[in-house]
Image 1 (spheres, one colour):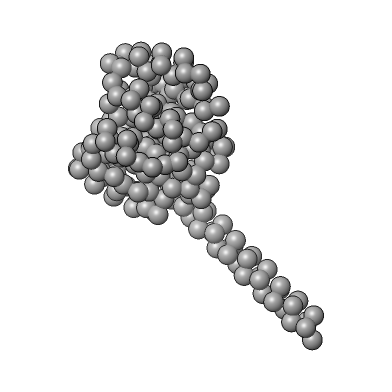
Image 2: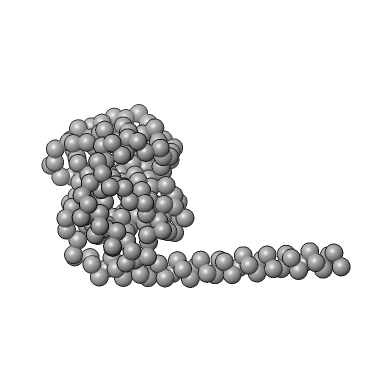
Length: 212
């Protein structure tokens, strides 16, 4: 009798697990379809300091391939890169904190995230990233910096102790002649605890610094 009861309990447990897995798989499929359609439909519409489509895909793939789960974005704009990052985190079971200074841009980003059903994976912070990033506790395993370029070095310094070993700090627009970029590249290329490469597949360029 006890043996039969144990078998029944085990069967119910396995059945429940299977049902949860099926539901999760279906939910993820729905998210994938919605995110992919939204990104493709709006591929040429992103302006206002947003990343190009290809750069968003680079960020997405870095997160999925390395199973990153605790991400930070410095500079939300209206949410193009935010969607790519949040979509990736929906696959790894992670969450994103994204920081934006401009209230109107953040409002648009929030609306865009809601449209693709990814709001559960994003925590929005409104305010001065100089102070917010400094105050964040972390830890993080993925960071995307796309705010004021002359503060890139300081953002990196503030995040460094909160970045996990094996994590990546990525920075946008490093192939462009913008103030602060040269100093940033010199800093990260000479940092003894990181290996930095630059993805040159777009005109913008993304510096990818892996913490050893």
